[in-house]
Length: 175
Image 1 (spheres, rainbow, N blue to C red):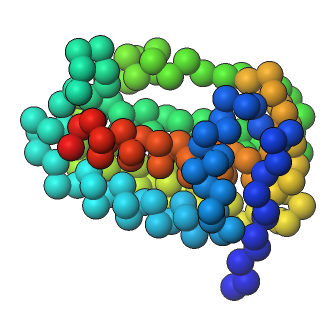
Image 2: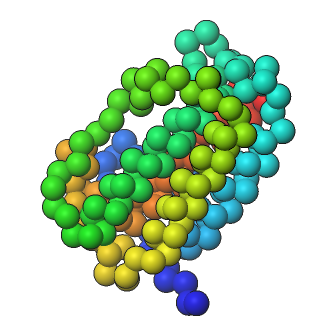
């Protein structure tokens, strides 16, 4: 199977708030390959953590590692859903989400660790398959999410950068 390289998204294809995430993915011509590689990276880092590490917060008001993992799952679902809608040429504006409210409502700390990692695995694998099966034209389609123009290829790079961002925080402040 030949891999399609969608090109790096331009600044007009996403809200400037996501520039940091897109910048973290710019080095990768093949976003699908990077999404796949990140799955292994996340699991290698998180799988060995014991319960005390899973519940660790580097500061009182910050998320625990378990909560951060739940956040990664939620954001993956939301960004992939946006990519699906836009890829299918749906022009309905898509709402934003308030990440802190999602983390609180999810009560992720009650979820079994292995099941949480399994959930991340399934959600990421689903994203990879969706992006892998997109027709070429879909990658450059643009819709509106959270009030801003957003392309499918930008959403792939946002997913890469979002996970990279949280992996950096995990390594620097939690582990």
